Image 1 (tube, one colour):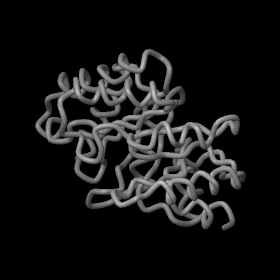
Image 2 (cartoon, helix red, strand yellow; image 1 turned 45 degrees about the vertical axis):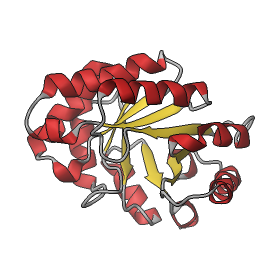
Image 3 (cartoon, one colour; image 1 turned 90 degrees about the horizontal axis):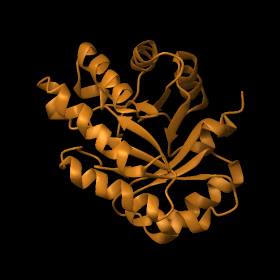
Image 4 (cartoon, one colour; image 1 turned 135 degrees about the horizontal axis):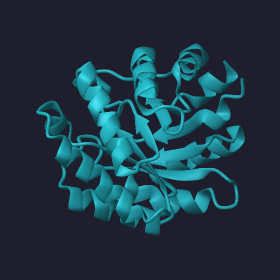
Length: 214
């Protein structure tokens, strides 16, 4: 299995410098990953670094808490796209999901989808470790109804990351047409293959070398 095209090669640490981001871009080019995923401040730099490579620039929005107003997430996503991002990984308002305000959650996602105007794919991080099974299902359905392209397990900044069980539940919920991204704690080829077997079509990882080289 060629794992490189499944991987969003990721660096989201707050202390990351331009030199660190440059290294990640070079690694992505060496392994031909699907994208490089970074914080919005690096959008234009990464887009320039990856120009002509076919590797996408991916930015996180409302990250890592999801607790910013929808209008701010939409503005952040729009700016990322203007600066060269082709993929947006947004975090839902997890607290609102936990209390069952699904109308807000859906509108929050829709605001970002509408802001990118079809110029970037939108992945929706539902932070599975903080939700019940039913809440995970409802969050995925919100993402579907809002017109997002992917659902994603985790930020990697909370209490736990991706599990094959959550990926399988998400895949069952969204069906075959929508992407499922597993992220958080995936550090080996075996772990990545387990996620893909469960239904993941994208893997978020900072340990891309270990995953690809096995």
